[in-house]
Image 1: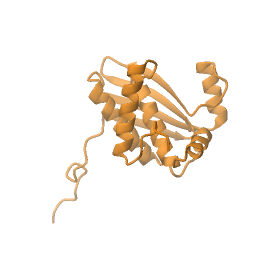
Image 2: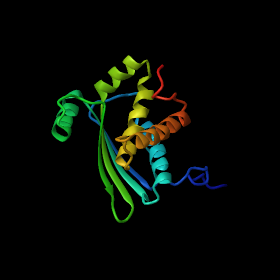
Image 3: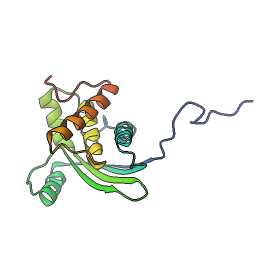
Image 4: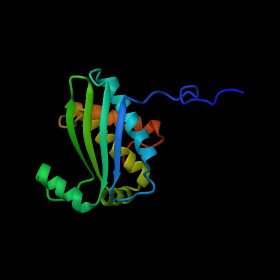
Length: 169
């Protein structure tokens, strides 16, 4: 009798370098923990390829309502409205662990997806990837950084079968 297959023998790779917490304050059946982890993993892989100082990542994603998103945006950014995604980057510690928190506002996510003619899953994948990249040090404050970050996002979304989020639909 042969041994049962282990994840390694089935060709699955070691992803222990990514620790995630996902909090569904607002339930969204289309956005499962498994999908979110997959999106986060792709973004972490891309960030690690760009930044050899990142050895592992600890990320939390919280799916919230408009009240919580508005409160956080007001408290931390001085803007009194619910935004689609907020990212809190905590940097890379001396051991190479990058840490960050991402807050995704479900009502804004749903409204934007509808307005932009995108599926909820497509828009959620984009915002999760966008937030993870911010948590791992990416930014879009100047033109070069924006072009680089958008190209990484576009490539990651294409690998998931989604179109370029920066092109009109």
